[in-house]
Amino acid sequence: MTSQGQTALSLILPTYNEVEIIENALSEIARSLGPELANMTEVIIVDDGTDGLDKLVPVLAKKSEFQSLQVIRNSPLLGKGASIALGFEKARGDIVGFLDVDLSTPPRYILKALEILNSGIADVFIASRRGAGASVRRTQSLMKDFLGRLLSVLAHGIAFVGMRHYTDTQCGFKFFKNRTAKILYENLIVKGGLADIEMLLRANLLGINVIEYGVEWVDIRESKRKLSRILVEDIISMVRILINYKLAPSKQRKRLVERAIQVKKP
Image (cartoon, rainbow, N blue to C red):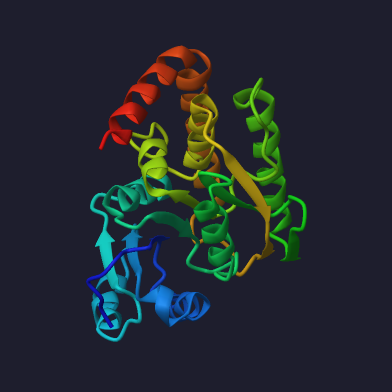
């Protein structure tokens, strides 16, 4: 079903060889939104994979409940952070957001994100696996959990010194007012998973109101990316973040403020 009316919501789904789960994910998201909201929602799949997902999605779009459903296949591959940024660049919805396609954070929380952002309480909604009210039904592997906690210690001990701290920077479920997302994700220095940290540093520099919300979370499956490769990419990304945001924070702040003023102009 397709509607040419208002786009209330844009959902960005970053994927990496997810052809076997994409149809179920889209069905669960549509069910959680309900027919009326689904018909006002565009879904943009930004794919870093090499499987048949780009052939399947146009078939699914013909019977979709969403206002629109499209897939962008990256060539060359971009990384998760850059894929999300590309989706936000194209997003038309009043509220925009992304979630992991394995639905480790249940899509019913999209409604809570919409409620909070539309109320004006905050401009950014980030899900937390460690915040108040959070519930983890199945944890990650011990190694992934250890590396995740180590990353959190490094981020808050170095990157967020003198700034607001977050209980969980890396949960793959974040929503924004459209213009806010375009500011926070434009010209990212980091292209991979640590783009979440860069985005939150930018939000701190601009004084953007971010709300954390504890969610139910379950580790559905292990990442398809090699852990050693993720670790190397994260180390490189953290160094780039520190160089650009801690050694030259005033330069970054000036550039971001200038861009924020441009975006806010009618």
